[in-house]
Image (cartoon, rainbow over all chains, first blue to last red; front, side, top):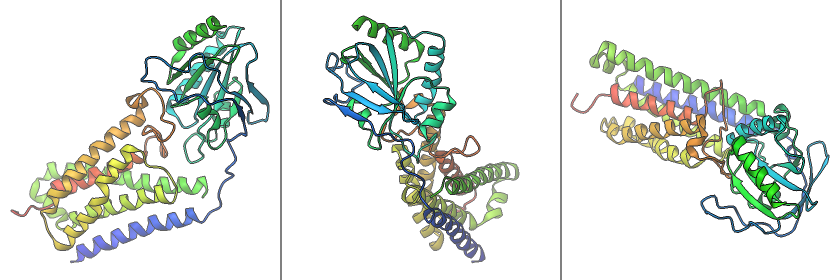
Length: 203
Length: 177
């Protein structure tokens, strides 16, 4: 009986500790919920959601939406039909694949692999302050990220507009903002070379 | 809710997980070093109560993660919940009624839960096991918690499942005994 009582007391004490901590946590002030988000403006029809299982992407050749946004220092970034081929990379701060891909892309850029006739942009999307590696700007700064960044809004408008189905997510656009290719997942330096070649060929 | 408080809560549960894992290893060593009878007499009827305590704290801890801190459980988290939550009820009933047969109902849940936790932890260590891209909604490779560089939520759950399994398998008398 004593052991039984001991078990009950131990269980109750353990649960009480957990509940006490939870009450302490719930009673505290919320952090600034706006950190890590931007207020981008997207114009044009959204692209259908990318399906990685499909052998062909039906949106190739369609015109992608144009996006005007800003990075965390309020520097304006525009993804539009400016006559230049471009690669747009969508990243989520909490995504382990993005955390692997970002330094790979940065090293590839630092090595001078991006030709002069192709631009690269990034979108920090799916931001969630409850998830690890938040906020995205700290992570990207720590990685020495030199690619222009658009901070997506809280509902991920930019990501949804390009049909993002997973991160990292690449969209290759020609100079008229038509979709050349979409691909999701880690692609590494070999994949980047392929995307650049396709961007150049399309332009 | 501050990040510091969540860190405190994470550290508290991580410490419990490590204690559970160390306890399970210690009990296993004791069982095989000293024999079955010594193991059974070490804890006696307390084994079932201890197992219930672990399940109850794990159940409460996971509910606080989802309902108070608002971490969204992923698919594998739900499978582990399916295994852990019933344990906190059936082990209590078994302990109160001193029904030793409860181990036959509880062990499949705790052992199966441990296997799922191990797989979940592996997907966090190697996200490629889940695929090449992150589901933007709620990938199982996402680490909401990372204490001491290696303790995540499935690590905590797995520690609980392992301790419960050891207690039920090696430290609880069967009806024949």
